[in-house]
Every structure is written in C-alpha cells, then in structure tokens.
Image (tube, rainbow, N blue to C red; front, side, top):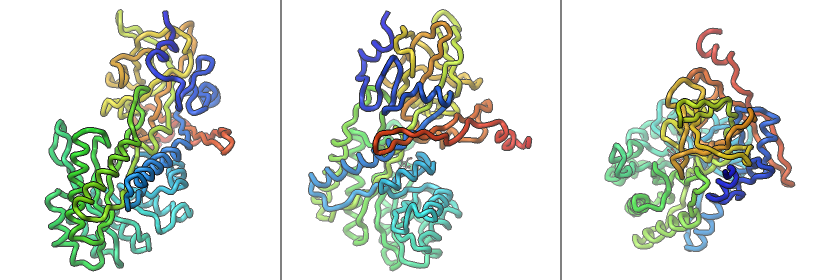
Length: 463
Ligand SMILES: Cc1ncc(COP(=O)(O)O)c(C=O)c1O
C-alpha cells in the first residue's frame, strides 16, 4: 500500500513555499515542527511572526503595481483590522510595516492609547472606527480626536451616531459613512444590518452633514461579508458602491477616499488558488473606469485586511492521544484539544484549515475522523476543503502521531476565547512565538503557558 507521502505528492505540490518534508517530517516556513514539539510539547499553537509582515508587504506591492499600471491618481492605505487578532505581538509587527488601524470596540481604543504611550504610533496614524458603538466607544473616539489624533475617523454605522460627535468633539474632524451592502442571494437577509442604506447616503449628507463646518466627510466605506472573490456578485456590489462614491463626491468636495473593507482570502487548503494580482488589479481598474466615466477624481483606497494579515502566521498542533474503532468503518483519532474551543470556526461555520501530519509520512494511511476532547458530539473534524474524507498515517506500535492545523491565526482566539471558561473546561493551549533575524536564524519564545486550573476556578467563583 502507498504511504502518506505518496498520497500527498500525487495530489498536491509539496514541497512548496510554505511546507517541506524532510526525513518524513513536516517543516513550515523553515521551522522543523518536530523539534518544536520536542521542545514545547502539544497541544500548542505557534505564530511565525515574519509571515504577518510579508502579507502586508505583498498587498502593498500589488496595490502599488496596480496603481502604476492604471495610472491611478490615488493612494492605497493599509489599515489592519484588529479584531482578527488583537495580540500585541501582532500589532507590533503590523505597525512596523507601516500599517494603520481599523477598530471595532471601545477596548480597541484602549489598545490604540497604549500603543501611542509606547511610541508605536503617533497622532498621524489612521484609526478607522467601525462598528455599532456603545457610549464608551463613542467617548473614547471623541477623546482621541480631542487629544489630537486628527486621523481618527469614526465610520458612521447609523445616522444618529454623528450627533454624539458634533456635541463632544471640540475641533474639526474627519468622518466616514458605511453603506449597507446587499447580502449574497442565498443569505438569510437582503441587506446588511451594518451601515446606512444606499438610498439614504446622499440625502443624509446634504441634510445633516454638509452645513456643519466642523465635519469633513472623507470616506465612504463598504464591506462584502463573503470576501473579495471573482464573482458577479462581488463586482456588482463593488461597482454599485463606486457609483455611490461618485454621486456623493459630486456634492461633497471633502470626500477623497473609499474603504473596501477586508475579505482578501487565505490558504485553507493545499489546492487553494487565488490570483491576488489579478483581483487587486481589477479592483483598481474598475474604480478608475467608473470615476473617469463619471468625471470625478479617483479616491484613495483604504483596506482593512484581517484574515489576510494574520491568518497564515499561526498553526495549532495536537498529538493523537488514542484511536477508537466505534464500528466496522468509523475510526476515531482523539486529539489532545478541542475543535469547538480552540478552532471554533470549524464548528460554527464549517471552516476547513490545512491539516497535515507532522511525522509518520512514510506510513500507510487510512480514513479517520478526528475527535475533540469535549463531550459534545459536534466536536469533530472529518473533511477537507478538497475532499469529504480525511486520510492520515496509520499509527503503529503506539508510535506518536502529531497533527497540524495551519493558517489558524485569524479570529479563532477571539471567538473561542483565551484564558476563560470553555466547554468541558478544556484549557487554552500554550502559545509559542517564532521570529527570524536577517540571517534567517529562528528564535523561539513562550508567549503563554497552557491554561491552568487556577484561572478557571477563579472565574467560576471558587477562589
Ligand atoms: C468592517 C470590517 N472590516 C474588515 C474586516 C476584516 O475581514 P477579513 O478578516 O475577511 O479581512 C471585517 C471582518 O469582519 C469587518 O467587519
């Protein structure tokens, strides 16, 4: 029978830019994963920090190229969407690559304040404040602008929101409006709950904002929930949005930017194919074409890539604790963690990640189901993006088998929670940071230990 290595090599290009296999063991971006496991033990997740910076450089380069190709007279401004991963080490890397920031909550503003105190940002940084805002968030935004963050820009989620700013901000300020996009045809709702309806945008500006000398409406914002994809739906929504920008621009001289949100995809499968250069080129070309037709200046383009920035920097590694044959056909490999708590998108939206064994590539393979440690019957994983089945090496004579879920760096910690109470009191895994110097030398540091019982007992009121 073929071994696992043959199976993968028949179907995919491995080695590739991300993965290599040496002595039947997996490497990720030059990191020997078995050495990592030997040193830190599973369950663990690790973040390879340079991948974050590389992503920002890639997107910036592709936008610059498209801007040059189409002789586009506007700028691209990369603004990292913090909600995809709020960690300080992420923000440090993001800001070191010249990115600006998009926020979604009051506590994000506390992070901005801290970054300023630590000289990681100055008051020129763009802080794009999105979301439906509770009083504390509104207060923090107004305070930041009053303190001189002159590029802190509230993006209105609804028309009432501006009243707070006009009564609490003591200087001229920039403003954005989010338009509510139409959802994809198969979604439960027609129109997004986020933002202001298309038809209200221009009248709202004319009736409420135009006459106010302290307000400079700068940005029109939209976000397509299903991401930037080469579909009729995406291009249709983008074009509709750019036409709205042109309509508004004709009555509002201060409007000089659009924000196209996040949604640049990441590799969730070894067979992932996406032409980033083509898509970014087409976005820039479309915007220019419509603006030229309409006779208005092209806007600067803000982006808020979250998953794209951090997703591919992180992986989560488990050991197989045991195997259980529950009937003639259904074999379970039990991992030393939980999908529901550590990788909640796998459970909540059936998200698939790249799944590969770390060792035993020379062993025969078979079909398995992966079981998590919670008692919930939904805590399992048994398909890939490209296949309805999972194949993994057979475990022989009690030899250990380790698995990696790759590109798990966006949203999983924010959704699953880190350090709180989780289903069946499954602890958060330890977290290792891996950096690389200019000579390519890797350095490892323990960012967080595996969660201990004390913190859970405290949260639960026992201590
Ligand atoms: C307003 C806004 N911008 C940007 C993003 C980031 O999206 P992504 O992680 O797909 O790039 C989100 C995600 O929910 C969002 O709501």
